[in-house]
Length: 263
Picture 1 (cartoon, rainbow, N blue to C red):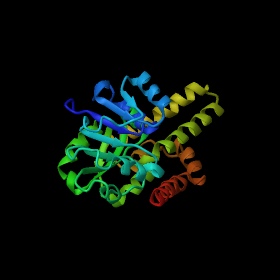
Picture 2 (cartoon, rainbow, N blue to C red; picture 1 turned 90 degrees about the vertical axis):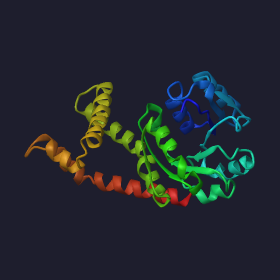
Picture 3 (cartoon, rainbow, N blue to C red; picture 1 turned 90 degrees about the horizontal axis):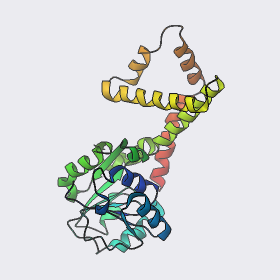
Picture 4 (cartoon, rainbow, N blue to C red; picture 1 turned 135 degrees about the horizontal axis):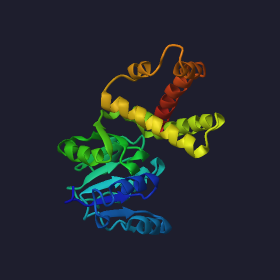
């Protein structure tokens, strides 16, 4: 990876999260280029990360990996402007929710293109990223997996599953933040300080997630191990089930998936 230079089209929140995750770790600031239409935003990125950020895109012939991170409504116009300007050797990736590979390939029929769905936890090196390769990028899978695995976990999926990925892991951090906030409210109601409650809630979710990933056991099995008969945990679980928390989370994923399909 240290032989590569990476470019971004779009300098919004997701792009910044990726930059924060790679800057000084995978890429030197001088090897990161950003094209962002807002001059003041360019200045922010330069001040924070010392990367190359401009309102133009005169770096397209310098980068080996291009990440297009723009809003869905701006995607087609953005790719149209880039048409004919990106070398055939450049690996084009994009994080635009709902945008199919075929819609990008019509602008770049000879290029290697990868559809990416990371999440904002990339900024702390804990993203869950899914990706789909087009036919031309079949040999680029290892590079993509290596790049995104350094920022969390990465998995290749069929493109038809990308909307589900968006609804689950793409939008998922927001669900987790909501749960942390609600749990900390409960802690405050029970007498803890706000700072204590947030730390307890956040670390508890982090620890539970690590157990699922590292132990390889089903969440139900792990839950049973900490749920003693007539104990405190089953009382809490009973209230959550009565409140429909499980169903609400399922519906949240399905609603976000449907929204992704409509974009």
